[in-house]
Length: 408
Ligand code: DI6
Ligand code: FE
Image 1 (cartoon, rainbow, N blue to C red):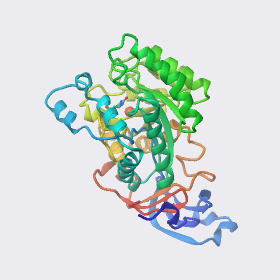
Image 2 (image 1 turned 45 degrees about the horizontal axis):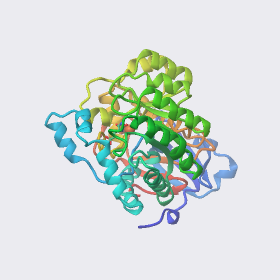
Image 3 (image 1 turned 90 degrees about the vertical axis):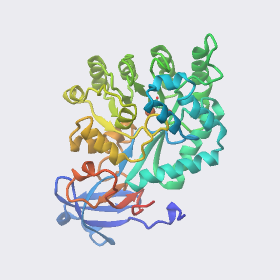
């Protein structure tokens, strides 16, 4: 396979591009950044003589951002898909010793190289669709060495594929099997997460944020807060798997800790929405999990919109509840199932997704100073990005200042 560094540089002046509002635009790229963007007739003299890249009139958008994934894991769980088709609920599957814990077993058994190979193959699907930045969570190791292994793989993926990766420590994803059945197992495990795992992995430079699965089948509000306190002590931002299956009050707690995002939020209350608005927390919508679980309790989209809470859209790629490897399909589902408008859904995989990762200074919009991450699309109008599903209307991707075509 061609290495990322050997790909052609995107430096120069990109002409004949079309913004989603129809305006023609030109983009000057230098040293991996957008040096200038504006109307074709206003190109500054310093960029006018640069090598030209003719966009052929293509629609241009910022590189897509998948802001919530569990991309690194061992095995797969098609058997549970069959169990759910036969009538079992997600919670019943989890209690029958399947669910997250079965992926934990497979992840612990896999070597770092095996995890890298399987996650690379998955990542390529997302990159080919124009994804330029991605969040990758741990949470299938649930022991220091195995959480480390997952996070190291996430860092290696960034290097090998030339993609921005934000790592999120999700040690508090599920109770590890060796703690289950102990009288104070949950408390003891959260002690380990807060006192040993998070500080050690942070010291190794492997953690960009911390997350918790706050749910009746996972961790309580008090346990969530302990993890948030440990993160705060290390200066790390927090995120939360909040109100997916029930209203635990997690979103309001996360907002008190200035969370970057609250994710899932099917059962989010008005009090949670108000707290998120006040804290500037992004609502991350995950239609793939909603669909896979055949959920019927929609997230409160109208109320989020009315409150002005920014909404992001992501795959939640994971082997249990969202084996999705198409962010554009999530855009389609966010519109069709969650009733987002097309501009809302597109902002959800660009600008608002960047904000959910704390990356707004370099990603999510096309502005001078941002990373040279953008996509040229083979479509006549932006709505086509939400309308088609099952095709990749990508003409060209520029990622980290390199031209990567549609198959990198
Ligand atoms: N919520 C989810 O949707 C995933 N994790 C979480 O906290 C599910 C993970 C799995 O089933 O493996
Ligand atoms: Fe998730």
